[in-house]
Image 1 (tube, rainbow, N blue to C red):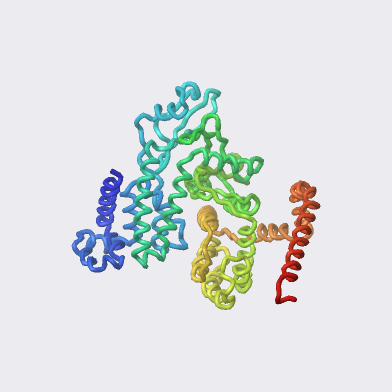
Image 2 (image 1 turned 60 degrees about the horizontal axis):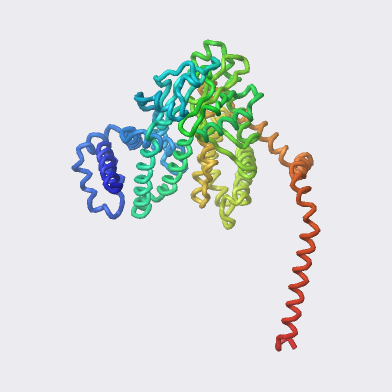
Length: 491
């Protein structure tokens, strides 16, 4: 039965590929070379190829295949280090909106809560506020009068995802085995990444945990507000959180008309990003304009409001140091330092020639730095760095890809709000201050202070460990002396 279902789904996918003249992708596999002439019998081949780019055709095909493929396309659009630019840019246009489900919404929520809605809500709107590929959101009011939103996982979505992921994994393995051209994009790794991300988004409790942690980090901050999660009402399939009210950040003209300080708003967006990355090592990794709002409380020092916490990223101290030192070295045009940092940090093989890698970086970056600083994109800089480093067998870590994608989003929002935004002027003091706090006497004593509880716990064990080591050394020496005495060659 599973094989039959997979077969019919594969037929549907093949039809869509033909419909958007993407069957040529399959026919690039060497085993299918003799069948390439079949492309010319596809009526859509002649009509679409001259009217749409391959990126447009790929985007439309994913939309036609349904919500799971739309979500997969969104995830793929973040892998700018693997996909060609024209395809990645087009996939970014995928709208994360699909028609909401309307049947049995109330029953679905009551089943998740195992109680009537009236036990928890005085009002519940069965018409969705917003609808995405995995979940949709409804407005509600708690019994105490607080306004909330209820995020509901689509019924049957898990079964649908597992079905399509099974097929996606099969196709990725097929491409990796038989197509050298497709194998350059690492289809199996990309399929695994899509599966991991989608499985995370299927657990709304996990999203709630992400939101709670981000809220703790900015609880008393005027930079970011994160809505409160109502854990008593939340389950794996529903998430209840405080309803926020603000202006979507992409409504630039409305923000101007209301008198917001647009320069401060843009600069605070950059500050928010670097605060998450370097202070907290935990950042909202899906900060596109649809997930960011602006509070009406303070127009001179505006506060951002974030929603949708399904995708987050984190960096360890090694990644933070790598990122900060590389960005500073880049903007000082110290390409030798950049190359040395890559090898010293273990990102590149130790036998990498520094001079060759330095030259490759210079060739990419010099044209960028010829422009005014306010026109230089941090995100594009990281992207170019990753593309160059991949040619030298550097394996880009997923958290750095998420960071680069988030930085591109923040930059785009910042320059939309204030076109003359100088990111370097905003970011450089932050990076220099962070690096200063990581080295020197102050940082040394801070590390001692942080490790002192662990050391004090282990200190009583030290004498016994020393005794055991000395005993092992003594026993080894005695065995060697005994061997020497019994070995005829040493006599």
